Amino acid sequence: MKRAFSGIQPTNILHIGNYLGAIKNWVELQNDYACIFCVVDQHALTVKQDPKEFSQNILNVAKTYLAFGIDPNRSIIFRQSDVPEHTELAWYFNTITKIAELERMTQFKDKAVRHKDNINLGLFDYPVLMAADILLYDAELVPVGEDQFQHVELTRTIAERFNKLFGKTFVMPEPLVKKHGARIMGLDDPKKKMSKSAASPANYISLLDKPDVATKKIMRAVTDSGAEIKFSADRPAISNLLTIYSLLGNLEIKDIEKQYAGAGYAEFKTGLAKVVNNFLIEFQNKFLKIKDEEVKEILADGAAKAGALARKKIIDVRKKLGL
Ligand code: TRP
Image 1: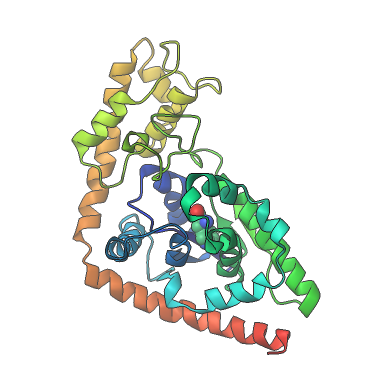
Image 2: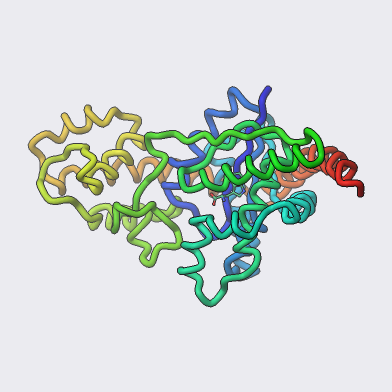
């Protein structure tokens, strides 16, 4: 079976955009690929973390994977920092990656603007560590959001360069992006991706939002001019809400449009809130039942499995480098 690799940073509690844009697709991918899902905690350290909260956030991301149906018997679930070969490989890649290549990364440029007081070397080097994550496991498929395309492209460049310099070592990965739902936009600004680092929590629906909080956020979500409940490229707000409705409610957008033909935004949003809350309640029931101890055991088991693969690869890499 071909291998797929992906990861999420434990920077905060996850939101419905993380589910619809990533984890939902991962669950299905388990049928066709040998999947490795990582909690990329070392990536998260490139922005400031409170150590106490950070430990819990790491466990919570793993719990979120499990609650949505990532199956530890079929897929490997582990944390990046448990397998030191990631940072070792990143170091070797550092020596063949050009500063100019990293300077082109739009995520770095964005983050440098948002974290002006903490433009650290790790933030700059972030894409190289990501390349190590992927290439360490010979992953052929990398399910990611559109915003990670450039990083996967750089990963391919690094793989190709290493192979050319030292002989065939790494498999070329391909990004996998689901068009529909790959980008859930902010509720308060439908021109930007839903993000946990947004200025206001009104931007996103956290997976742990209480139903009354989620309802309020939906009722206050910005809308476009014109009253029709209709999907269209020039109406980003209603189109985003319809996408969320469709994906969480398992309904076709055109059927939702039909259901709300002639209705106003208030009625539509009330319906959407119901769908979102059913989804949240079901998720939270599962999430809250998973004990910390249980998830720690699963992560330890995952680290042993991922570690075995990583060690084999790194031995080959060291040999190729003459180490
Ligand atoms: N950079 C990714 C993101 O922010 C997270 C990530 C780190 C990742 N390493 C990865 C995703 C490897 C896919 C594969 O979404």
